[in-house]
Image (cartoon, rainbow, N blue to C red):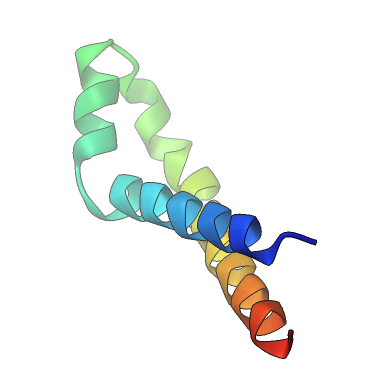
Length: 67
């Protein structure tokens, strides 16, 4: 399996989810297009995805070190 690609996917996904969670970028973007009603439930999607991508990055790093 290509652990480098898995590691890069985890890092990029984690950074994107982190940027959306911890900065008001997503709120501003949704407000600009009139979808501010979605802001209330966005955390239910972004926080688990952040956890998933951090876990994916850790798993790929662990497996890469075993090789």
